[in-house]
Length: 119
Image (cartoon, rainbow, N blue to C red; front, top):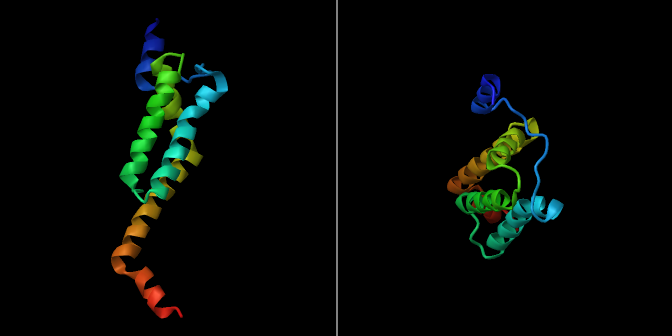
């Protein structure tokens, strides 16, 4: 490995062109499918919280890591590249703002006030 390749690897400047997964495309979809099923399940059981959703996301990412046939460092680089996309950043920021706004509404009692005003 040349010095330039080592520098790119250390600074994350390297891009991953392709990742191979066990079970093919289905193996690549397992993390997302797990997270969706996890989120629906905890919502139905009325256990949903941001911590529970983050736990589901971490377990999903770990499943993807275990199903990835490529190097783990390539999988991690692919994750970081995907999260650095503008759409991913907007989704994460919107999620955080929605959580904070919901908490403010809950503490402020707006929902109870609207129910009281209603017929």
